Length: 155
Length: 237
Image 1: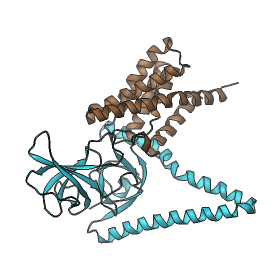
Image 2: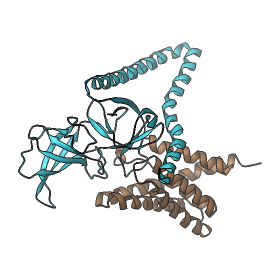
Image 3: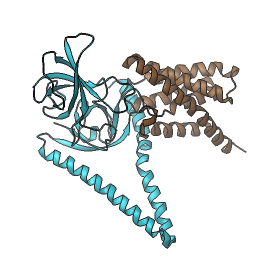
Image 4: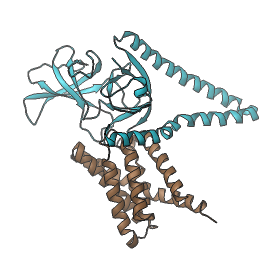
């Protein structure tokens, strides 16, 4: 059931990320959902499953983008391995942990992209903005996915 | 075919049905509203308003398609129309996804335009869809000519990571060239991807490149609104 929920979430969130317009009052950036999903996998599942989810999310984002194929998958994969390694010492239910992990994962992916497009002061501001957005999205996604998993748990 | 291309095609084909699902959501809303109207006379007014909105949307779409058709008649190339079905999932690149692929004769490095001007070029293709790198992306370059002064240059997206409105910039413009504000910028046909004579935008201002001092950089207001692309045309030959 977990596999089905996570796979469906991945496809829907990737499609949403590619379909939603940019947000004018957020500096014209697009809201990213996939870093939060990678954090959810990293703090919830074992290393293998979280890595598979991260690679799936990364390849999906790369397939729906003009960036180099595999770049995001690599960044998400590293983030998932790190998160799965520190999972035992972190309380996944704390919103601050979710927000921090969301921000760091997003920053990592943005940094990888900046290695290709070039890092400037404005790009750094954009990186920070995207990290803040992911920090807000992560607890909401945890709330939603935990609720779905609770409702669909085997009785 | 490289493994990465095969893998990309697999993920694109996996996600495309979900991306296309977005098209059907307004229809679901309309049907729900229609059911409510049948049950209640009071809702009749709402239904009529809905129809007027739908007609207005169809009218706008008709106008856009007419413009594209008019353009198609005037272009000396073989072209094909396409709908925009998605945008770039990443915040670091600027591209769109269209509903035409190899089965429609598309391949990489084809020019994409609409009635307003040049949009970009095809960078990856699968069987039923393709990705178009927009001219507003700094990595998409086109060889251009300033229409009045006939000064050549290379246009690309301005490197504004947080720009609310996409802006283009021509680099390597001759220092001595007299660039006039409002002057039209056209594709020059050099480079082999973009045909000659397609409108790209108009000059906002020119300034000397601070790094070299040898060339001018010219800021361009794009003719195309890259944020509101719905139908495009691809030049096949």
